Image (cartoon, rainbow, N blue to C red; front, top):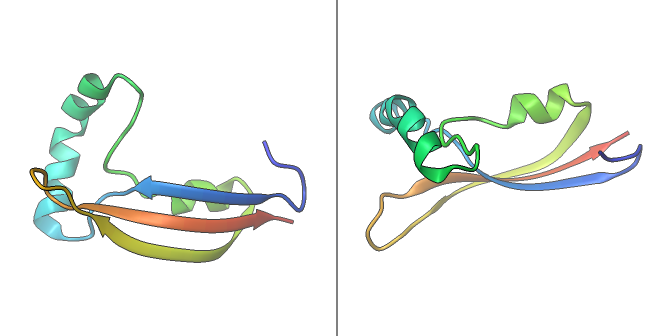
Length: 83
C-alpha cells in the first residue's frame, strides 16, 4: 500500500496485442498458472488495475524481452503516482 504522494514503479509482462500470440497466451494461461506456481498470469494488462487502484499513470514504456530459446514476451514499464 502506498500513501498519498507515493510512487509506483512496475515492470510487467503483458498480453500480446497481436492476434495470434494474444490468443495463444489466453489459451495457455491456465497451464502456465499451474506450472509457475506463483499466481503469475501472462495474459493480463495491468493498466486497468493500476488506474482502478487510484494511481495516476505518468509514463508507460512498451518493449519486448527476448530470449534465445523462447518467443519474445511483451513487457510494460509503468511509472505512476498516487495523489
